[in-house]
Image 1: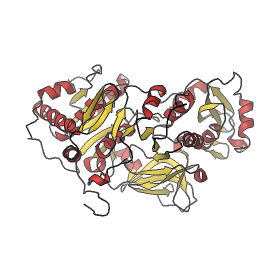
Image 2: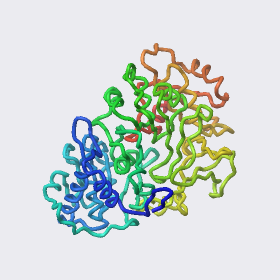
Image 3: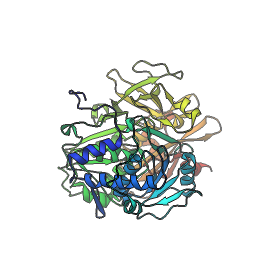
Image 4: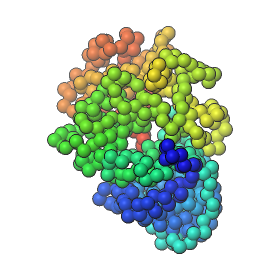
Length: 499
């Protein structure tokens, strides 16, 4: 262990759980509000029982185990997850809200042998030959005094997490124990979120953000607090009991718009963290104005790059920046992967000391991973001080005539409109220019009908954007389609402009 950092050498997830259980056995690690809570001692003993039961069931090191859970089953998921890893197997977290075809694809792709589903989750329809188990059944069958578990090494495969699939069929991203425990503390004084007794989130199991919360529960001084189902009103009621709050941008917008925060004492919130998608500067500013004593932080990473990320503390002087790297390195490169100097726009790459990889997909690995570096699929630039500014997702850049147009820049400008709650921008076919700019907006409550017309919106944006960036098409709707991770499904929106 380094005396300067308090970081340990590479270790396994079971090692990390055993350390916390010995350190804080009776401390609550995870609480699902109104449903269940889990102490570190209960987590450790439950994982041991699950591991023993799985081994007795014929599970061997390296076997893939699907974990199909909903938000109401976070404690059961945590026990099953660590039990799978303690048995030397590989955890495949999956949301219970996946469509049957999506679930079958993941289970068949990873060749899962067993599916453990939440005690409150309906048994999923799984491919033939895969056994179904529940945490309750495994706990009943397991022997906590049997410590005959296989040796697990830091380099062993621990997890396969399926991407959100916003641009195509989800890919399985594999991570080793060393990757998952990278940066974890090795000294009690180094525990994260020491300024809070609880951290609040409502992220779905099966997402990278959700897995981050699981490992926050393992490594933070604060206990994880979540709720069976996210609604802005329910979430707002719990904010006063949490010193740290984690959100995705869509949740932040709902909280700010619904009025549930009005009149609440928010002075105990020290940190608001946003992840999973770009946080529009106007939304960050509203969060800062609402949570006056909190630090507003934007985290930028991906399922493939984690835990490497950039971290940006909201700074009005750098409204559009998404931060500098933490737990990794950052590079802007040209199409051949050669580094570009500050100010030049190119592909964004992040590097992790313990890199991930796509499971059983050599072609995708060659396109995305290179010597520990991960091509993020975004276009951006660095300033002279090393802050990252995103231009757009590569597939979202609109090529209109001679121009390459950033949808993120237009979306940021739309969020400044006083009548707009949410916005998404995409390219739609144009017979002359190739593509034209289309905007989809969600009005704020009580916005008079007819306020958001194309002409009015173009007039508002004319002082903020160049003429070629102004939307040529407009759709006003009640909601934006989003996946489990809160990202807008732009491919679903494209069909609405077909006529």
